[in-house]
Length: 259
Image (cartoon, rainbow, N blue to C red; front, side, top):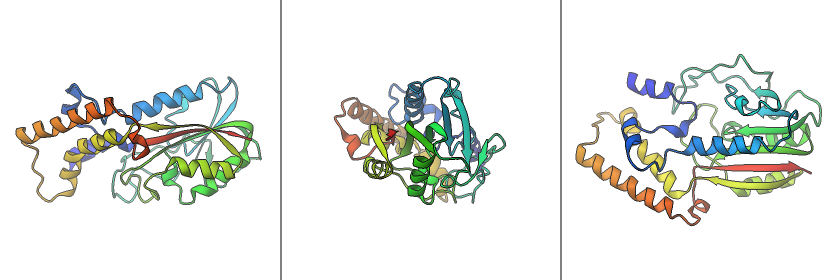
């Protein structure tokens, strides 16, 4: 159990568990979820002109403030997650809410209409009990021509419970809901693809087996070879992928503009 806790303590986003011994292999399929998302986010934020006011909605521990040095950064979160949750699924063990600027419901943020030039909401929507209301609130508090940046998982395992309400989202959700609330979608990108999703979950097998089976037995040398053979094949498939993200991916990344 102590080994499991040490793994979780290093976790800040739940899709990053990759056993250290596998990271030395020639293939990295299934390990780039966080890196891909953060590179995309940093690039997207840099398109917002210097000095503009941005709200980080559901900011958590403000991990993306570092990408907003050219902006006037304001953080918001409901501030109730403590790292322990209800101890089910993946938890972080520790969590710091002391640096938040605004503590409120994400669907009822105590600011005036058109208060922000931009809003980002990163890996938060699965934790919002009424996400449609959050979209409506974003529409209220963002200025005309303002930029909205959202990322969500397409599918994810249980994390931060009991504040975990949805398994994931699709491009069709955002195209419909954002359109109905006065936004024009400028970009929808997928993070990863079908093969990368399979690889990510295969890499999690030892962790899940140790935590959730009564008598966990580590993979034998032969079994590890078989696992690595599959990962190698998934790497080959993802290197030659031609659109499998429309079936399944690690996440979805959206940029919209308020009309």
